Length: 298
Image 1 (spheres, one colour):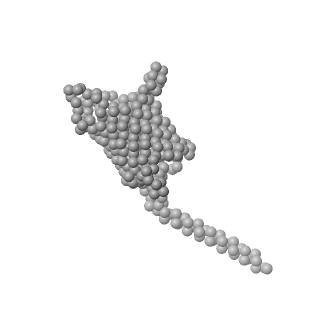
Image 2: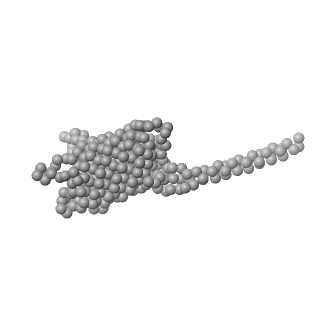
Image 3: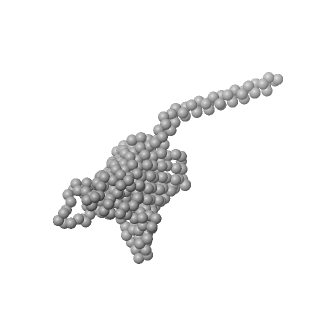
């Protein structure tokens, strides 16, 4: 009986040592695991521009983008609500990292197509990768008949190309940042002194304020611009709302167009003078393959 307290003490010490050893083992095992960082952004768009995100294999995303007229147009135009532009787009994920898309905009009657490839994924754990990188390339055709009938442009003349490298980091659960170096090439320009090649740098952010709600911002700085038309840097602010298979974005922007060459290189509204267009993006995912066969990556 005298040995019972001693036995209990040994048991408690032994149990504590074993517990510490188990914690050490679990911690060591966790260091050997590499985890892909997910949900850098809620959807494939930050506001006007693309995010680094791609959908999982077999998902078809249907995207509707809408921009009204300028808010400072006054009550006669119901503060811009009497005017509207719309874009419909379909994006299909061939793999978890590679997507193709087609779209049509009412503004300038533009058809667009693009490829999007997720090259690098941010990772934590044993193999740390600090950034995500996605490559983006698009081609658009402007079909608006705003030309002299005697000087009709051919198909090649109406084409514009955009290339981007999307570089993002999710710093924590509440903040993500993306930089977007951009190159735009116009086959034909309006003025003789206008450059065919436009360079810009985009900055996009996501600040999470609730489980399914974030404040997003976007800014594109033009390195060079057209001489024949006044241009401004594109600015967009808004709310990002995630609801199951939908991502709904409310947007305030000085850009009227919803494709890269339009909102980056051709924006002429001054955001700080009230040349702001209210609009929204809404997307819906359709699983063309069994969801269980696809690996969810964001």
